[in-house]
Image (tube, rainbow, N blue to C red; front, side, top):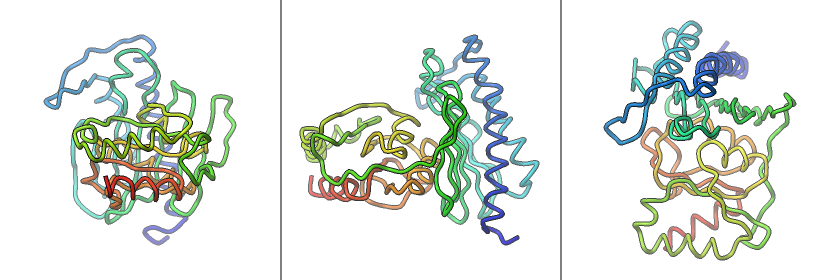
Amino acid sequence: MSAASPAFLEQALAVAQRAADAAEAITRPRYRAQDFSVVTKDDATPVTEADREAEAAIKRVLREAFPQHAFHGEEEGREGEGDWLWLIDPIDGTKAFVRGYPMFSTQIALMHAGELLLGVSAAGEYGERAWAVRGGGAFLRGRGGETRTLRVSEAAAFDARSAISSGNLKSLAADPARWSAYADLVRRVGRIRGYGDFLHYHLLARGAIDLVVESDLNILDIAPLVVIVREAGGVFTDLEGRAIGLDTRSALAGTPALHAQALAAFAHG
């Protein structure tokens, strides 16, 4: 079995799914009981015991299958070296977790030599899980347990039929030219929302919205979602059009046509 063969990636995906299950076995009971203390990290974001326990559980599952791989987790940082790197955010959306609404998820992705190969985005309390392997399509299991293939919409213009969702836009708002370019896109579309975190990428991948814009994030927030959106036929870069990597701090994801038009608008903004 070659290093990144389809068979290997399917094996790795199965392990990632089990790791997500292990995390949700910790996070969902804690969330429902609101049984945790909250500490504020140096970057002013919250962290709970559930974050740390879930990350440890994910790593136990991954290490058992891939003891030579490296890990980069939200809570414990980088562990190990090498071309194979697991990217882990045990609770993406800790603020939602803490405040008692179900817009949080577990994010697990595998990168090889800087290239994202697979991802699992598990939002059990919300009621869905999405996953994808490079070259294998993207899928989502919904509340009823049914699994569907994901595909972005055919939106080709910013008009009354198209929809944009945004996440954190602080840096974008601090750039007058780009903020004006974004405002122009908002004026042209039929709907503007701010679903945030995992949700707007799931919606994009299944064709329910057409473009996602975020200016303040890190790779752990989006790594699995990059694979999912791309395998659903979308385009996913940063706001400058660069490939997603470990240093990524922004996101522009959408249908091929709207991504290209938005990228041009921001470039000229």
